Image (cartoon, rainbow, N blue to C red):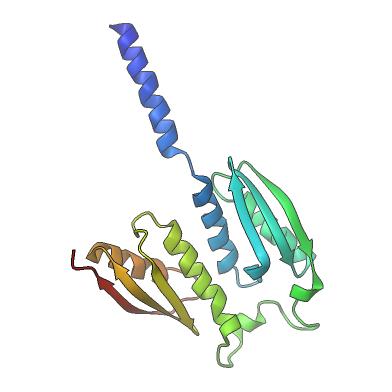
Length: 184
């Protein structure tokens, strides 16, 4: 009886460990969201991959300060065992001399496609990482600090969660909900 109980308890502990384990995709998504949301980084040239909770960062950044910031964000992400740094510092990604790298996000002039792309990317990454939002394709467009969601979702709850995720993304001031709920 005790042996059967011990075996059952061990099986339960193993299942719980696997259920609670952070997946590599989830870790990569969390890091991507952090990078895309950081207004002082141009994360468009950074690739994130995770295998067995070891994160590999590759691509290029515009300065040594950005390089250190990316490494810090990745290392501080829950579930990360270690970070493999394959980033290159490239002046091609740097802001022009005398310009603050975060200035484009704060500039009062009308938004360009380049300045709204990180907002759209951050929303897409957060939607992909959210377990309450299904695998239905949701299109995300950004116009300034307004995000437009289009597509079809399976339920009203999924629609509400998708809008909530978008609203809670850094840099988003307004969400235009054009999502439809499937009739099935």
